[in-house]
Image 1 (tube, one colour):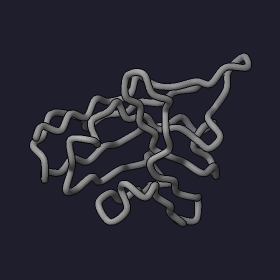
Image 2 (tube, rainbow, N blue to C red; image 1 turned 45 degrees about the vertical axis):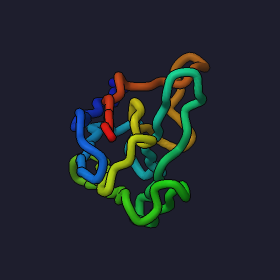
Image 3 (cartoon, one colour; image 1 turned 45 degrees about the horizontal axis):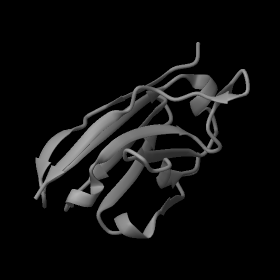
Image 4 (cartoon, one colour; image 1 turned 180 degrees about the horizontal axis):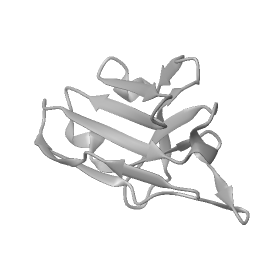
Length: 119
């Protein structure tokens, strides 16, 4: 079964923190590079952070020093610790492998989790 279940989003004031979690099926998690993506209305989904199976991480410049991606290979779960949140971090956050898992030629995505940062 192919599954991605994101959780942990919510409404927070600027400067606050949230911790997102994503439970993935083994067929997606495996030894793949995993990533957190985010999307705002009218914009393309962007990669925010990535982590390899050996825990090597990378971040988009706008979140460096504020976000931390981690993974638990025993639980097929990837996390995103978000600190010092800014209003521009407001988005729906998704996790997936890199490249995104496909089913029938189309990218498969979970429901995502909404993060809203108020100023």
